[in-house]
Image 1 (cartoon, rainbow, N blue to C red):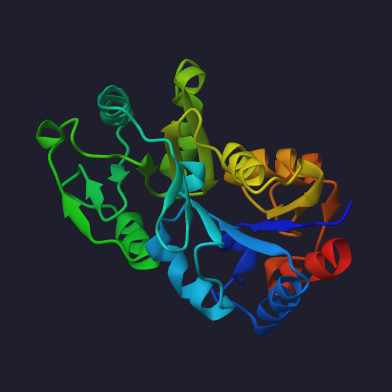
Image 2: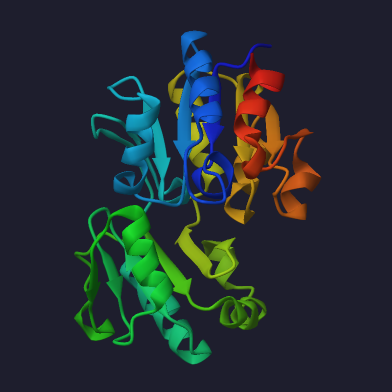
Length: 268
C-alpha cells in the first residue's frame, strides 16, 4: 500500500546536528508533496517553534497539519485545533511537588508561554525558550490556577540530574500520565492521551488514512509511539536503541540526511 502521510520528528531527525534544515531534506519533502503525500511535522515544540521549518518547506493552509507538544495538540496550519489533550490542575500539583522532592527544575508550557517555577531558571529552559520561540516567565507554584491551559510539564535540568531523577519517578505516575524522556536534559509529562502515536492515529482517521498508509520517522523516546503506530516506522541512524528495536526500517543519521534517504527509499 502506498504512503499517503509522512510524520517527521524535528529535533535529531529533520534537523542536522547544527539544528539546520538541510537542502537535501527540503528537496526530498518537496518531491513527496508533489507526489500527493502529506508531510506532517510531529514534535514536542509548540507551533511557534515549528513555523520556521514549515515556512522553509512551504507547508501551509487548512489542509496541512502539525502535531505539537508531543501529541497534546493536532491543528491545521490555519490554527484550527483538531485534538487538544491538556494537563489538569491536579496533574500540575502532583508533578510540581514531585519535582521539589527530587530537586529538579520544573516548567509548564502553554501555547504562548513557558512558566518556570524556579527563580534560578535552568539554562535549558532559556535554550528551550529560544528554540521554540516562547517567552519565559517565572511564576511561583502558589500563583498557578486551574484557568491556565497547560499543554505539558517538563523536568528540565543538566543531563546528570535527569539521569538521577528518571529512575526515581514513581511507577504510578505513568499509570495516569504520559511520561517520556525526549532529550538528555528533558523529561516531558503530558495527558495520558497525549502521545505522538495517538495524535497521528487521530489525524490519520480524520483524513481517512489507514496506519498502513502512514510512515513515521524519529530518533528519541517521545517518537516511540508513532513509530509503533505507523505501518512503516523508520528509525534514524542516530536513534536510541529502543526506537531501532521497534522500527521496520533504519535510515542514515541526521548528519547524513536520514529523512531524505527514508523518503526516497520507503515512500516514493
